[in-house]
Length: 154
Image 1 (cartoon, rainbow, N blue to C red):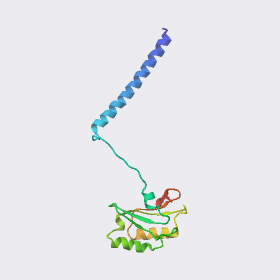
Image 2: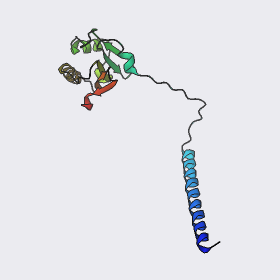
Image 3: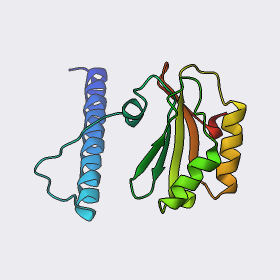
Image 4: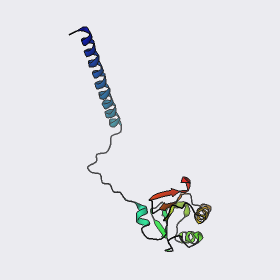
């Protein structure tokens, strides 16, 4: 074997050893990290997927959904395709009378059938809700596109 071939072979062996050490070192590091924070033993894990909006907005009319911290949901609709024809103050009064506070409301979302953006009524309702203590997410779910547009997304 020539000196040049021997040098190339040694270089390849050296690079191979470095790669093995790097890979093994990473494995040792990961093992060490796992030992520091052991995961609980899990026999099985079960998961489900779904879409809350598809469940809430399956009717051919606008509906508004109030979702609260305790997981409770209150919906309102006047069964109109293009509006919820009721004053927001009336909806808020109902929530208050039922023992709910807008401070505990996480999200208020209603549906539109076309992606027309926030209407003047939407803007007014959001302002009223904020005035009454709402600090959650306010938005529109577009049933035609499956897209959610929140106030902060505009």
